Image (cartoon, rainbow, N blue to C red; front, side):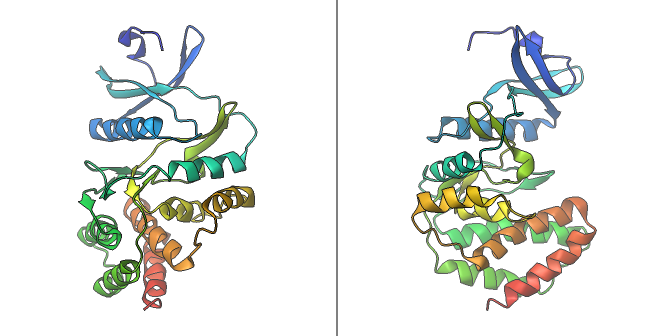
Length: 264
């Protein structure tokens, strides 16, 4: 991409804008949130897969605060769910040496804690479930039989040894789109984890069309569609939603906790 004067990106409202008929998207927010998003987009852009990732173009500050400018995407194309399923499977074939990420990032409007671990059960309990439970505790809400739930999650995942896969981390319908170049994902909360965390989240609010899952599972040659793992992985997102939105999600935490305890 040709050099563009960075001042062209400043003092604009959030949203799509054009420079010489080239589309860009400007997002405003807190510095560490935007820096984490930039890092995540760069990681997705550099990985080997067929998905379309909006490349980060510029990060800086103007009179109104911090801005992140990315490539603008035309998302008015017809949905191709098979392309999305195939592309996501390809993304998950990008493997790391351990589970985790260099530095915290953000999942919605709350911090996502990261570190590194060679064991998936340790990582998911220590960096996903426990921090969200502790955050809720500080807010005055105690998760039902908290310690028992943590122990059940750890024990169930202890016998499972996935490869550390690069995951999007926040894969719901609001973070996907379809361009004339193929299926696109954005607004990531990336880390190296079990690829099934992305699949599980797609099912959290009604699921994606069957073509998406057919394409993914055909590529994976019989990938285990464990309902218990989906339950555990989505518990993390329910905890996160309870922190951000409260309300019904606080009760859903209790429902999920009870269902997890039935695993044991």
